[in-house]
Image 1 (cartoon, rainbow, N blue to C red):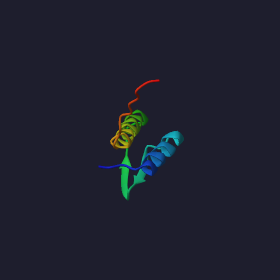
Image 2 (cartoon, rainbow, N blue to C red):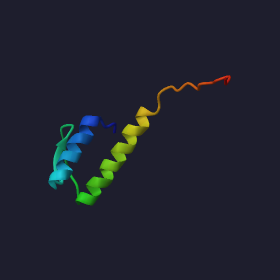
Image 3 (tube, rainbow, N blue to C red):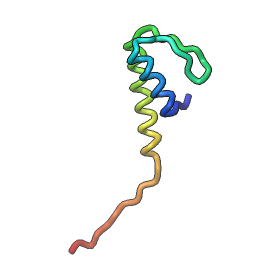
Length: 65
């Protein structure tokens, strides 16, 4: 499943309140614990940061001065 930045924000908002049950993308989700919820948050953060770094990069060269 692909997550968005808004999904992450919603999850973090509920985590901060101590709520372990929420509706995300129209699907009701219940976490067993807040620690499980935190692991999911870390996983989503990793997926989102990886997707940002998949863009093209171009090396820069310099002849020096």
